[in-house]
Image (cartoon, rainbow, N blue to C red):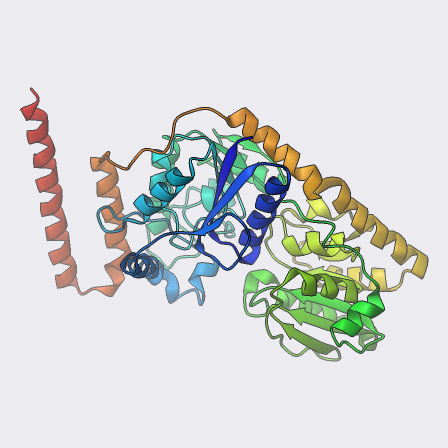
Length: 477
């Protein structure tokens, strides 16, 4: 068997947990699988934290904070929406550290997952000659920085010249787009959409339309996420209720607009008989909802408690306004708990309307409410059928024993090539574009005199480097 190394910013959170599940599935299938992550929280086998000096960790964090400055004023939590991927030559050795750590593992395949948050500079991918596959957990890979394409972008198919998320004027999204475009031209990479929706979006995008694009899902351990006795699960969680329990979960869910808590709140307030229901919220504190008792379970850190939660509840509601392949939907269905969600993104890959859940009209709170009442009004036998359908839909398509062989088959097709090579080449054009991006990022935060001074120094540096290149060429004539 061969060796694969997964690269992911964190081994926690949605993308991190999905990556760890694939890693575990591959280990069980007999592959040598490793993970390198910037933020390690797991004690599972073969998961390594990126080896960085304290100075470089601080530098990386500072660079990321600077990159978010131009739009922090207009977006309360900019990193929830947008991650420009910048590279500042000579300032950070993060690329070098990561490449050296990859090389020490001697992998046959490099598998990228969610790599934003100041972890991987796109620029560094051009120095990897081993086969690369990239699982897209959101849309950032084919945009100028946004995680989910903003309204108004579709007409230009993500050219990112005038980003609706950024204050005007701002070219940071376009320059990030150009940096990605130049890097992608240099690498042979296979794109994995994870859902049919994002695979299609990637194929339509200007940045990835020429790449090989496949669609393989994340796996789940159905031996862990499985149906349990509902009364037992409620007792274990100290939930004393005979009402219909509705579950909603997302880290910071009620405060992040994309998670759809506003739509959920509106849907619940439209219910005809609110007294029949209680809402269980996990992942963060919830706002009050008129007429419905809310049970807050805060953040659930382990799989065992999540399994109890899904089994304790009658319905899981996923009101996200944008979603790729939701871990929570997959987990709930695997436990036999039907899901009500908007018909957006990758939700349709897992939810069959009125078969194992309910797909509401996109962003329509009234139809979300209709879905809740549809399930509540079913008789006991119908509810059991829906629950069985939910469980079987995951067993047939997403169980790790089904999914792992699919990835292994793709890896085998990709095998070939050399190894990781150091970042020794220097591109005058790339250097120019990168520092232009850096200047734009800080433009609004410096006085005009300071900015002119920096530009002057920048031009002198460019001239010196250009002269050096010319002299170097002359010396070989």
